[in-house]
Image (cartoon, rainbow, N blue to C red; front, top):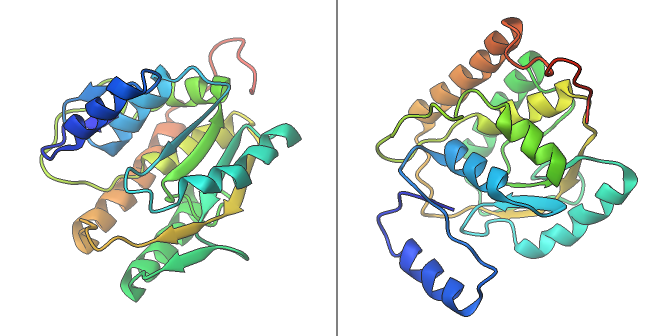
Length: 218
């Protein structure tokens, strides 16, 4: 999934795809990570689908720790940088502090019982992914083009929709490595995360995440 990148990402993936036809590159205009992830997840057709940050800050091998939980009835299994067994490598203190403050706000207003909503390593049962990502509002079909990098609260919206639908969610501790190339802006991105969390609550109050008529939790 390419979100209008300006580096060699597309060329590298296309070269790899030419040798491995099962790998498909989907190209979007630059509308942000939430919109890009949504596009990829709705295009996926596997029984289990996963999205991961392209820099593999969480090693792809961690998927082996997530998969067994689907056999136990969970519909969403997410990597977590919190809890016993989790490892945060080279993360600056201010980033960890930002994350803990934001998580406290999230648990108060929206997603209950999840210690780390923002880790970019999440797996879904295929039918759950199609339902949840179709119902996204913040960065859904009407997402606009953006400039520069932006950290958003799309993960909060996705997990909130999942919980509201009655989906069982499991949080699994993983290894995560902080990248020096991170483009997080402490002030601007903190405000955007807070705003998105408030918008999820506001959308819920307006009935935007209600199940379809005659719908049942998945």
